[in-house]
Length: 352
Image (cartoon, rainbow, N blue to C red):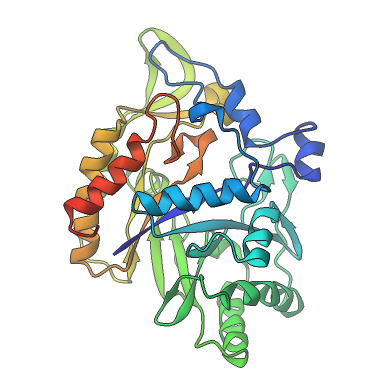
């Protein structure tokens, strides 16, 4: 059983973000402007030693891989952005492929949402729409992916490159596209592609080999009504539009659900924390109660569940989602404690 962390590449400038958000925009702009919404609110979140890295710097990518490996992370799952032939935030991964560095396992998750002004992937205030095209566009997309799939570092299941699609049901002819890509893969010397559907608010599409639980959003989507979660609209008298969720309660439901039998192979998912106020201000969803010690406790149990269900991988949200409060990288408040929590959880299960 190996841990894979989702990886956000939005820590470098691109012309589109400069146009939409202002010159010099990276995800660090969001994190730096974050403010406390109530007294005990942990904001702003600042990287240890003010290491506001630029992911076009190979030294930054090397540092990430080195500490990830040191603390028990097996590989990164890079977010991949493709809009009918147009790629965004592609520079860091291009360099990973071109240089062969870092020598660290990886896979891709196609984050096939439209980009919007609200940072919510919905279809209003759209900056970059999604248009999936037909076979011609599918072939162009596959040809790019093939370069990654043939890289020796690419993570495989049954000798097939593992490829995640975030919103498969949003692709009008997804089942046809998946079959088309499977045929192209075999024509190009692969045994196929191991397609993984992201469990969120969309139904499963035929042709996928497995699912991955993307947390905490999967649990919130699945269980908000059923479990009667109470989103606190007021915190210590601070009446705001933001919502507050209990970290322990959500983790309890994740662990309980993991024990149920799945009808399709499912990779379990974990999350470090969640607070997207850096992006959304007082419209945020904020979790309360997260600590490195709690994370280690819950992750230890979840890894054990993954081992018992013969899961090859467990996916963590996330390596560096700083503006969503979901990151393992060291910060000024906790230092390396969340990474130490990962290592301890693996050691507790005899995996390190």
